[in-house]
Amino acid sequence: MVMTTTTPSSNRRGPVIRTRGLTRHFVRHQQTVEAVRGLDLDVAPGELVAFLGPNGAGKSTTLRMLTTLLAPTAGTAEVAGFDVVTQRREVRRSIGYVGQGNGAGHQQRGRDELFSQARAHGLGRRQAKERADELLAAFDLSEFADRPVISLSGGQRRRLDVAIGLVHQPGLLFLDEPSTGLDPQNRANLQEQVRRLHEEHGTTIVLTTHYLEEADAIADRVVVIDHGLVIADDSAPRLKSALGDLVRLGFATAEDAAEAARRASRLAGADVEVRGAAATHEVSLRVAHGRELAPGLVADLAAYGTPAQRIEVVGPTLDDVFLHLTGRSLRESNESPADADQSTTSDQTEGAAA
Amino acid sequence: MTTTTLTPETVAPAGDQPQLSRAPGVLADTWNVMLRELRPVLRQPVSVLFAMVQPLVFLGLFAPLLPDAEGGSALQWFVPGIIAMTALMGASFTGSALTDEIMTGSHERLLVSPLSRSSLMVGRSLKEIVPMLMQAAIVLAVVTPFSFELHLPGVLVGMVMLSLFSVGIGALSFALALVAKDQVWLFWTVQQTLIFPLLLLAGMLLPVDQGPGWLQTASDLNPLTYIVEAERALFAGSFPAGEVLAGFGAAAAVAALGLGVGLRAMNRAS
Image 1: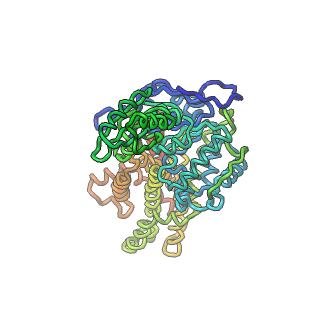
Image 2: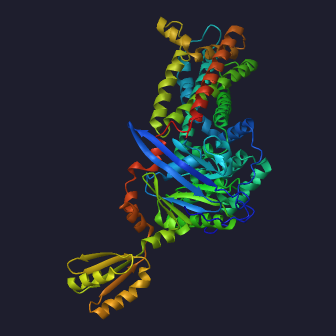
Image 3: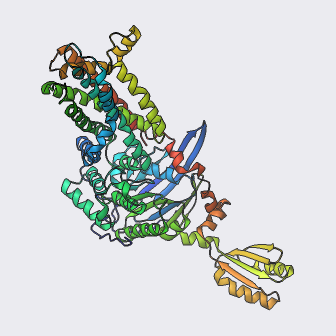
């Protein structure tokens, strides 16, 4: 488990989130679905963690347990030092939460929602009003603050949701699929805000996403979840470099390609594949530091008399990482939203008992 | 709208959890929830008319068919029932607002906020009193120029009784919304199936005294029967202790049942 401690000033040394054997089952159509299976996770203060996985992987269920919306079937979780089952109110007071939907009621006005959320967190009337104004200005929402939320654009509503989550200046912010449904510009905008919140204020941030680019772009640490299990947990660059670059070489003849494959397989850790398509005699290898190794390999092959005719070097994406880990592409997994996290959780009525 | 500045003092301090300050109590939370619920109503008072369409139709198209009763005009007899109907309609519709909030996400946000579950239910239900009073005032304003005599003290006592009733029905409606979740049809089917039998068995449109025995028994079991009877007496300016007490008893029972069921549903909400 990777821990990046960025707040030495903190006198509490423990993790902000600590789960042990965290498990959640759902019973659907008389079948038990194991949405989250024995999750052990530590998140240190100041981390920016993305839970990445396809729909139905268990990311949102995990987040719902950490935010007290759903009681675990087994295992424990502490958030901000409080137990998510026995100290729910303390957890709720310590965290900011931006859910998948709109935090602001559609019939309400943005300013009112900020105000009542601030009051719920114990701010006085004047403080709450000032805080609402401050956040409206910070999120460029002042001119829409007195309109019904339903009349705001998707991007404006999402900014309002984040503002509501920050009313009480939480040290820990959860965002569930924050950019789903946003257009690319608003998505980039939101990511920029999240990143800045993290960098400038050291807020610990945990978000779920099924967008590879998002996890790659903003998270220090990517926790890849599939079928309720953590299958990888590291920084995006390390996850990718562990997989290595893809080097594709084209040759004039099948013999050349075979010979090149033999020579290329001497490179340490190389995973070589020969593809003899009709017109292209192609060798592809996945190898750590492929970009650096490729020029030498090309020179070596030329000197040996089997010169490469084409070369292509591709850095790995998180999708490649996911494909490598699960045998499935995350992009394709996302195209079957039938068993989305949402439906998994919204079917549940038992939820958190009193 | 591309750049936003979050000046350091406005957003989260770095690192560890801030000390948890004193939390607002249940009463403050309940008040907060009630004010939040009231804001859209007060900002757009026309919205209270929505639940009044059917009562006003009955008032306009049914009341003129009624013969005058022995004690006074037909309107004098009919209006208390119509106001009870308005209260029932308004409070039973109210869960649909929660359905919207469940589907759009703001209910979930409130569940993760420090507001206690009981405040979320009680605050919402208490808010029902305000639109109910606004609706009653509209009905009274409409009928007073006609053959309806306004006996203010009785009406005010009647409103207290209906407030209890509205809180109970509102809580039941919210409980139904919490159970139905995103199945909007379920909410409306149950709501529509229940309100008309309740209204008819309460003798709101026609007296049930001349009905068959089984119907009278069903009517005796309906709390709204006692409320409508008490309202009729109060609106006529009389205060018969037995009927008024029965009315308050029935309204209090509905409030207790509603809040009990509502709190249970809210505590289970996720």
